[in-house]
Image (cartoon, rainbow, N blue to C red):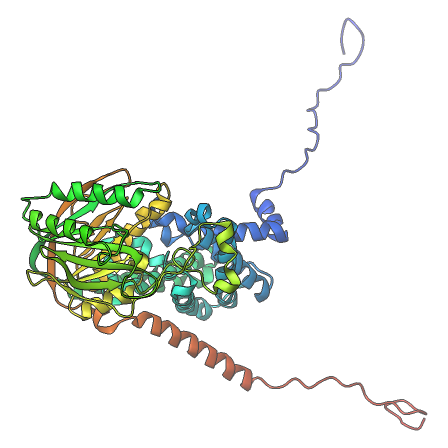
Length: 548
């Protein structure tokens, strides 16, 4: 009791905290987003776009091995196979936009239309991912997913590699262009084998994160990938050194305007003239380096021949013009020697959709009004060409995005080419990821074939890679207007990829065919359900006691 007041003091009690509204955790917010149709679709598109960071220019090659994991886990959470197929389509759309975003300034909204159409190729892959990893998969299903998902992905890459659908730009395995073990795998099974193993690693990581009961097959799959890489590293044949050749690349830089072709030729001429006395075997100019047919402009042919005499080497130019002897515009690699054009000429066979021709122009010709699509279709060449230099070296030319096609460099190698040459121009996409990504493809082609490759451009990036895909010398960046000289190592021997071709793709098709056959057999063995028919009733009685 308080002596002064005479009142009993109140016993102290802790103040009860008012209940605060529970804040939703990140898991609850994620569940809410997955339940929303629009938010889930956005997450699918963003998840599909993640692998683009593994390609140049970011070139986070290591990210490729986990970039598909969010997409796979999202598909796994779908409530049905139909929703999983939709997640696959939206993810494919996001992937195509991210990998080809540099086309937006040229094709504008048509880029999104193309991405949406090509994204449909991933819808069956989404269904497969849900079929094998949805719910709580058994060890058997999880183990099968390590084989089925890479096979499905390879089939998607195979279909979209068709020239009419844009070609094999952005194949997942191409992100590993600077990883030596991956390049060794490419020499065995091409970029296809690298893509398959990258998807297998992503699938194994997804299984490890989501299902404890299926960790054993996931670990076994990852060990198998490591074993395959080690085997390729140890046992696959390596290119055998066979001398070298001295090659110069001439990169004039950006020269725009109505008189651009003339100014470009003058700049190339000045740069090439400065190469005199360097002991060169070959000089390579970029794509569209000459804007007139040399038969129509003998003065240009004489100027190039004079350059050849001055530097003591033949010059490979690229003519983008109407031919005097055939109808239409061609892009042609033309070899010019001291006495003028040698007669060796290669007309580009695979053209860039919308950039050099408009597919189904009568239907899609409106693309020329919303972007920089070709106003007139270029004409196609009829066959690949292997050229013979004066010193006896055989070279195989490719033009622009033909360096993205593994089969073309493989064919040239089988025809005897000892040096691969790619003439390119990416000046329309100068400040984007395109120049770096295009140059990186030459490393894959070199590793696949065991032949060095020179990638010469008008405006960068120009680069050279050795027979194992290793970089030779320093590249010329997009800001350079200069020349570069390279001592390019030559090699002999035949890689397994050149000998056996696209066997990983055939293996993937076999896996999916076996899966389809197994599903069909299971459907045939399944007993037919007997329809539940209610017992017949009579007019005067119950089913049990008719007549009553």
